[in-house]
Amino acid sequence: MSYGLLKGKRGIVFGALNDQSIAWKVAERAHEEGASIVLTNAPIALRMGEINKLAEKCGNTKVIGADATSLEDLEKLVDESQEHLGGKIDFVLHSIGMSLNVRKGRGYTDLDYNFLQKTYDISSVSFHKLMQTLMKKDAMNDWGSILALTYIAAQRVFPDYNDMAEAKALLESYARSFGYHFGEQKKVRVNTISQSPTMTTAGSGVKGFDAFFNYAEDMSPLGNAPALDCANYCISMFSDLTKYVTMQNLFHDGGFSNTGVSRKIMEKFM
Image (cartoon, rainbow, N blue to C red; front, side):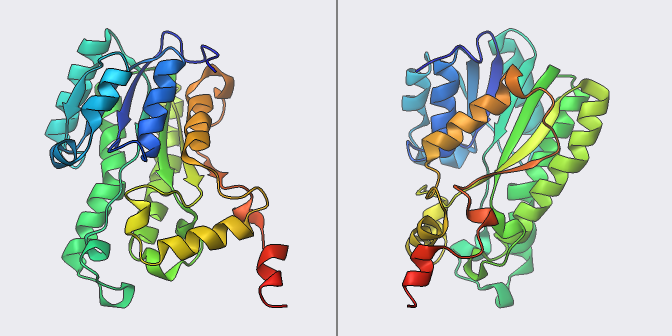
């Protein structure tokens, strides 16, 4: 059901790979709510994914390849997006994360530090680069909204989440720190959404993900939050209904983050 929450707004969505992606569902919902959007991902992801199908579903919108670690690519993306959309940007979703240590099977106590730097650059520093580019180009409308997706491993220990835990902690810190400056100077709000374990391509790459997904389901009073509901939350954060929410890490996890132990978990030991 559409409520016209984003009617007339313009946005950029990073990270849609396939129909399992949260970013994919955010793009679909933004289009349904009346927004005009540009889709972007790394060139290699554009070749691997199905983003052109998403573009067709979103009114044959423009797809722009961009390496989010490259300032040159980001500047080009922001310029082309404004040209295509016909004005400044109202909302941006950063849904980017990748660990070479995880991909290469390097455990947390045996990290390759060159891989670690790349993990930070892709998963965290890219967020700062994006916001800095948007600010320097004065590309955001007043009261615009910028979101990044994160995970509770930024605050709690999940052994197999590896160096992505620190990457997400840094991402959340950038949202707070840059959120202050963007709010003060441009009235733009910046937040992170800490989502439940979700059956996406990125999530399923974490060791033991299926078991942890089931554990989180049993630990959460409401169960794990599905990708579509996360997308709906993002839409509300892009809308004018949340104009004064900024510099926050917002948990969207069915209550997992505030639950010490659940009956379902206890029953397994009784």
